[in-house]
Length: 405
Image (cartoon, rainbow, N blue to C red):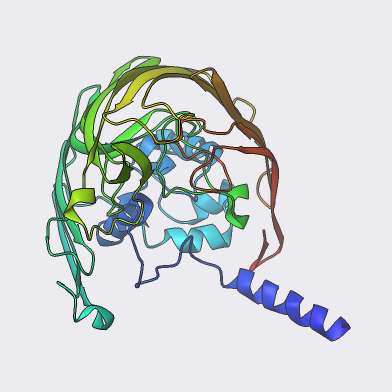
């Protein structure tokens, strides 16, 4: 018995010593999420730590808000020239080693062009309409704009354009906008967040909080819950105003002209069940930033063109949400509360400790059948309704080259 326990502990420690990635790619069912796409871009053209905006650094899961602030303070006096600067602000060797592929201290190209194609032939689908799985992504970008086009097709599907995403993103003065397919992150993820984002894992004690009020092109090949239309942000000193409009097709199982469930697999074998529901959504958000405090309020209207078979679900509803992040004394406190159709959901927590001892405590309350279509807060499942409880995460660095989560 003692030998078994010792063996389990040894395997655990060796696993932690070699844990250097945030995900595993299963080629049989792999969908590239937005973080993976972003990191693959940075492998080709690393981010200049001396020129990167705080928003670009927030997107990297290794940087905490406190560390980003310290980096900005260092850059005000002199350029960062080596990894020692990151060690001095409290980052450990594990995080620095993972960052080395994505960060540089020198100027990078102003113009970027990337193209990626992947074709897989599935032997077990040779007798079907198509045995090919196809993925293609092309992107052109400068400091002021980014244009991209993505195509994805699963085996057994005949249409090579089964799923596609297109986007034009541009920055001008204090304006940021995306035309085409996009996604939203807002607050702590109750109403808007990537469905492929981080959830409860051993890594969460030091991965980032959601960065309030953020729009981005939809660069994932995951085929559901992308928004299509226009989204824009305008920065006015301490305020940021976000507006968004979307009209998107979705694929669902329909019975008696009512929605039974949405197709989250992305596989469309029956053309009649493809893009058979339309979603109309529009709204706006306002955020205020001042001396370590961020406060925001968002409101939007969502409507599906068909009713749900479940009478407790509404095909039309208004949502309002308020979010706060207090990060003045280096132990961020965060919370979001949202209301729709007389239902209220909430999530909140605190992160404390730094360097070799980091902690995260989160409380969550998500009632049954709360509208979860575009949200993904800190939860146990992709559809986060009907869940409540507490979560505690701890990261320890008891010795060099040893990390315990």
